[in-house]
Length: 157
Image (cartoon, rainbow, N blue to C red; front, side):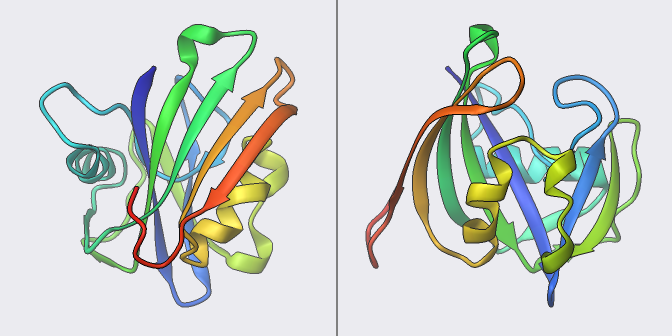
């Protein structure tokens, strides 16, 4: 299973999402992130991917979640996602060849244009709740099975 990352930048009551312009997830709003390379930790990958995709350097990342994603029709794309949030970064988000960033009020997140499971776990991630989850998605992006476990205070991933 491939390890990947997602980061959600937050300012006040807003979250930065980015429209994926090519590749896996094209046409969907998401956080920045991508594959963890063999020589790096998930945290290092999250920073590198955000620098590449949005031209900002996130700081003081908080790990809020880990999710096993199973795409039942495309098992080669199954992935284990490390999810981070932060309210600190250097630079201003910019559009790149891969992503077009946009700030959204947390109450106006465009879940209908995101992955089908995002509406279930993203509010918890933004609120700083720490969790481990598993989602199985069919070819139409519908959840066919899921589990969520919340970490207790002091419990680590």
